[in-house]
Image (cartoon, rainbow, N blue to C red; front, side, top):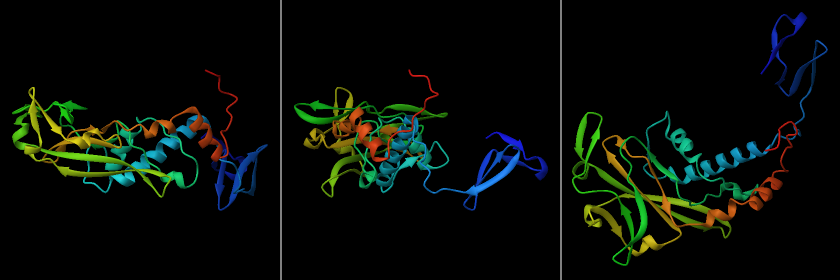
Length: 257
């Protein structure tokens, strides 16, 4: 914020500041104070509204994911790491009120963040059975720093499952669970491991497989067929949500694109 000298006061103050319920500002070189209004409308431009909706959803997802044993190792805190990755997700717009706690299952939700090679995942069918298809190979050698490890001998694999629920008859919410994968749960098909089962046809579920070696993990995101979130990404959803917050603040000095 630009600062000005307050003249006779012998100090530098911001152009405007609030202290103990009073707003102080300069008028014709004089320091003027008035009682702060608690009813001033907060600026809510479209970019601000979009970012607030993003952060709302990031927080709602984290509140559910944190109940799992998660690893995010690339920033100072796990939440910061998660939030930086989740910021790339599509924006979902919900109205003010109880829907503030809503969360949506979608492709790309991060469940881990680390430096090990990621597992490439795809939903499909193998021998006519729904399957989670991976790029994992038997006795795969992966270089980690200066060490070469046979990943399928020394690593652990965690399976994360995400489920889209409708709670209290109106609240969409994603819930997560995780467990370690046993080797006999995976089948080798055309040189790659797959997991087969009818659950992988469920379009209200999503999955991720995380590699873990000691305190290292891979960066993984959810794959899913779920499309519930898409109805909350439309222009209509954006306008409805913005109206519930009192509408958007006009920005007349911005040139239209």
